[in-house]
Structure formats: structure tokens, C-alpha cells
Length: 295
Image (cartoon, rainbow, N blue to C red; front, side, top):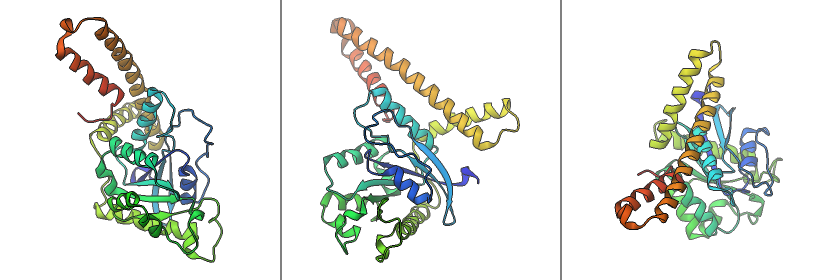
């Protein structure tokens, strides 16, 4: 199976919204580990490529991307992992929410997604709900969405694409076809088809993703030259690992320099450094602690 020809689908949402279980449901097999909410360690993005109903998909499970209560370094590692798995860019985004009240927490996740990528990413997105068993009888997901102005606006920005699954209760054949994961997978794939066709087969990208992809390709070239008879999938995985380690090391170094510089600024008078020096140090600080923000 040629991974490079697969459609890259990145799955984003609040930790605990059922992203990993949903990915397994779409693939029809348990490829992704289901972690408990008590696991507050760093969760890196994972990917799996598989043919699903005639389409070769690479699902990128980024369930740990917005995990709360972590250090700045852990947050950066999660962001970096997601970007590397997505590079050179995803063909579609699946924004995963539970069938429950859309609160400020969920709105903040959407804000973070748009900050990490851009609001243009929503043009490539579909909203996918889990915990579908929470829907009242004979209620469809578009009716649930219509009850919330904020949810309705999000789905509108995503081209009106929304779907619902229940990773626990809808596995078996249901009398109600709508409340069937098999039916919902087919409908979701139609939405992904629509996203890809609308953009003429191209994927979402930006300067950050392009830069990461350039670094991966550079490492791939070096690995090919030093290792004969290695399959392309292995070469790319090794290249991604090298880029991740190099970028994280660079982040740690620059972060340390920034903290030292901020202490130095506070230790001297404004006369020594002046307003310009403070502005330059602030700019460096923002680049380190929000390195994905385009300046």
C-alpha cells in the first residue's frame, strides 16, 4: 500500500472525546491504543494507513494534542508531532466532539485549532460527534446542532458537514439505520470525498507544514544515500523521527536562551537595553513559546 498516495485525515478535539475509538471504528480494526483520562503524560500523534471502502486513508490520531495540565515543552512536543504526521498537509480535518453541551472549553479547542493551522482549515473540515447514544430517540445530529448557535456556526464554517457515531453501542446492526456506525462511516467518507473534490484533490497546507515537509525530505535523501534497499515507508518514518528530535532539541536550546535573556533584561535598567531591546526580546519569547504562530 503506497502511503504517499493516501488521503491524510487528521482528527482533532478535546482529550477524552473518543478520537482514538473513532479512528478504530472508521478503520474497522483496533489500531490505536485507548488511553484513560488519568494518563496526563505527553501524547504524540500517531498515524495508520489502511484501505477503507475503496479509499486509501492515513488517519492521524491527535487525541493528546490538547491534553491539559502540561509543561510548555510537552505542549510543543505534541504540536510538533502533529505537524510532522500531517506534513505536507492534511486532505481533511475531523473535529471530534461529544453529543453534549457545547461549552467554552469546546470553543477554546476550536480557537486553538484555528491558531495552530488557520481558520481556512475549517474549509477542509467535518464535525464528527461521538456518544451518539445520547441523542434523543428519532433525533438526528443536524437537529442537535441546530439547538446551539455556536455549534451551528461551527458546522456552517465546515461546509455543513456533520456526522455522529457511538463507538460503544452502535457497533452491531441497528433497527434504525441512522444509529449504525457502518452507515455513518459511509456517510463520513462521502463528506471526505466532497472535501477532496472541492479542492481538486489538493490538501490544506501552510508555511509551517511546508517547512516541516522540506526538512523531512532532506532527511529522507540522506537516509537513502546511506542505506541501500530500505523501503520508502521505513525511510520516511526514520526521517520524521530525526526531524522531531532535531526540532525539539532546537526548541529546548532556544527556550533556555530566552529564559536567560528575560532574566537578564529584568536585571538591568531600561536605560541599558532601551525600549527596542525589550521589544526584540518579547518577539523572541513569542517565537519560542508560540513557534507555530506566523510572523
